[in-house]
Image 1 (cartoon, rainbow, N blue to C red):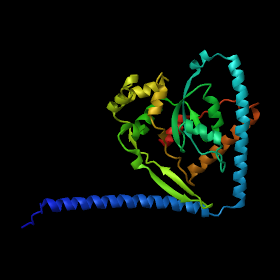
Image 2: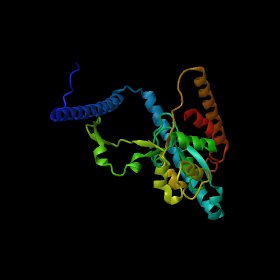
Image 3: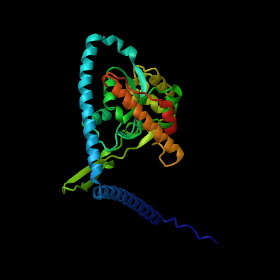
Image 4: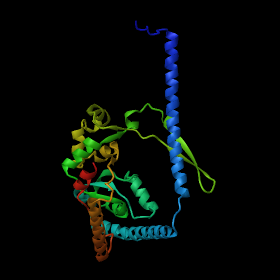
Length: 308
């Protein structure tokens, strides 16, 4: 005969309490392991041997990038003054254009200047291969020129916009769960520098939810007449009055990094990229001033189809 299960309430409560305790201990150990891995990675980076040639090359690249920002910002100021004197503000809305901007790897070894970093933060492009929809006009174009080495832009088609929103559309969990306590979720990492100074890194666990519930969209954007995913797509394609609200509602789209390797296809892509860089350099040299040159756009549909 099979043994009867022990249904004593005290034993059941003790078992549940022990199971909860074990689960919490496992979660704490997992967090500790992740923090230890991050600290070890940072320590290994500091102890890594760096050649003098690489330091000199990185320093030269940073100097060139700072000089580019300084020269371009001064010429852009002159251009904006002349544009304000010649053009009217009424025609600005007619020239608005939808573009999709993706953050990519910048110049090799160069530190991002402070001005470029601020612009990337404003555009919400804080991580590599993040993308956002932007309404391109005369006010935004100078900012994109300043961060042009760190981004690629292009005009997306309707099918690309629909695929992005349906496959990669995400909303921040803070919008969905307003009652959660942020103080309990934050974890601090204390890391010691070479100067024996401790740095505290605040880490907020970013949890995003998929955009697949029309009831949630109606709850958050119903006041603007947007009640479903198709309304969001229509607002972005037509550059409607609530374009900024919709774009802020969506998180930046996270794309896959390009495939790396040493196969024949990857070698061919590297050669094509080098040739395109050479052509862009020749065009920039032939142009009188880079501030007056137009932004170089790529076929963003092909770019996204490889990384979505």
